[in-house]
Amino acid sequence: MKTSVLVVGGGLAGTSAAMFLAWRGVAVTLVEKHPGSSPHPRAVGFNARVGELLRAVGLEAELPPSQVTKGFGVRRVRAESLIGKKYDETFWSPPAQLSDVEYSPCKGVALAQDRMEPILRDKARELGADIRMSTRMLEFSQDDDGVAAIVQGDGEPYEIRADYLIAADGHRSPIREALGIGRTGRGYMHTSRSVLFRASLDEYLKDGVGQFLIDDVGFLTTYGDGRWVLMLEDREYDEAELRQKIFQAIGRDDLDVEIITTGRWTISAAVADQFSKGRILLAGDAAHTLPPSRGGFGANVGIEDAHNLAWKLAAVLNGESRPSLLDTYDAERRPVALLCHQQIFARNDGHNRDGEPVDAPLYDNNAMHYGVLYRSAAVLGAGPELPPAQLPEQWHGQPGTRAPHAWIEPGRSTLDLFQRGWVLVADHPQWEEAATPLGVQYERIEQLEVFGLSEKGASLVRPDGYIAWRSVDLPDDPAGALAAAFRTSSAGTR
Ligand SMILES: Cc1cc2nc3c(=O)[nH]c(=O)nc-3n(C[C@H](O)[C@H](O)[C@H](O)COP(=O)(O)OP(=O)(O)OC[C@H]3O[C@@H](n4cnc5c(N)ncnc54)[C@H](O)[C@@H]3O)c2cc1C
Image (cartoon, rainbow, N blue to C red; front, side, top):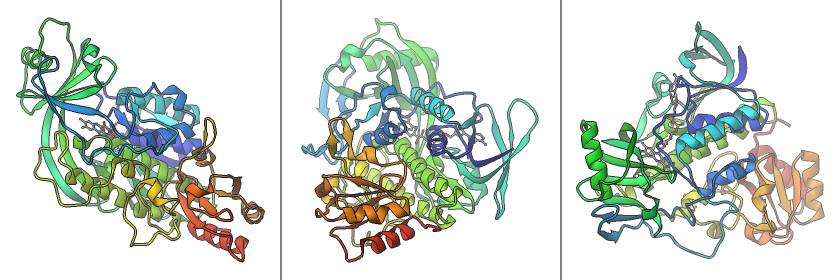
């Protein structure tokens, strides 16, 4: 069979890629060797930037009300037990800067991975993606014209041919290994055991603390849906011992506890040395394995990879952009992964027990979520002198950063203007005349100040909501300036 994009791996990154591609009208097939999501979730915290991406595809209403509020504000304490004595609260570093700036129309979402994945999978299917569970990719090859993979479901192996392949096959990524792509980073850190259990303990969550470093036991946290996970040191435990550890962590042994499953996790940190090779692009943990010691970088960064890739693949496949646009994927996303890696080890947070913090500047959590900078051929005017991340109000509409949020009217954000195609925001008729012949959507807005523009300026926003270029004032030849910027940043064929 033939498809435009074959995605290997149906975790959060691969499923997001299939969903974002299908949303853009790209023919996409996903193969996942397992029949469904793992009964033991890993990720639970999805940041508001991911919320924005899900809002754009119409998923916001399907997500439960958030428990994660400003920033990434999951509170932690060291404790004798869940019900016992609490010691000092251990704060995430740097301490959240609680400014009055509202960064996003969305909130973070606390939802266990095994609940989030089916929501994304159903949406991908609804949008037309061909999702094949219980189907394993056995081998693959590529040449100048495309990719061929042999896959197997219930029956005989068969071939799928595609123009491009997204390797979202997890941290061990057999595809990355077969391509001979090396990795950089701290590498193996430690191995943890976990026990996932159900118990009625919500009454102990009332003061807003959801993470507990329990003396002599381990790390206890909740998925917010009646399920809890206790992380333990790596050794064999029989069921009686697991129950004893759970009761010790809770500080009571007189309640019903249902053990759901156990897990064993290799915690490591490594970033692939290249995010693509020929027609194969790595996404998610295949591209970067980031330890959950400071939660929120792993799955979130993988979903953002998928989003970055989707519009580029769509533009190349429909002939609007030259294939060189795909080179900007590595140029934009690999530095972000390396920055996350650096930030994890610059903080001495959570159960980051693997050595002293490295000496590097700490970027605010909101800067990491809303303010990373892309420097690539798809961005004009983002020079090497700029920092890799800042808060949106510090960037002030800098090309290479996510377009800022401002309310246009109640319930409608500037961000709601973006993510389909190329958009020019401005408030001057000459810009409308410049945009229309290029097929760039013109959006007249009054909130030019948050984009760092004068009342005669304009910002060109890419289909992923990142600013490609801006003209702070009206140049002599707006049509010529915009056409040149659009052609360059989109690797346009016209
Ligand atoms: C304990 C723990 C807690 C975490 N908490 C968080 C958190 O709160 N927030 C966060 O952002 N991140 C968190 N993470 C990290 C997060 O879970 C991962 O980054 C994320 O799940 C990776 O998604 P992925 O789709 O890239 O890879 P995976 O989820 O590993 O998916 C890869 C998929 O590829 C499939 N596959 C592999 N080879 C083939 C093949 N040949 N054919 C078909 N299918 C194949 C596999 O079956 C698998 O389903 C946590 C991680 C751990 C270990």
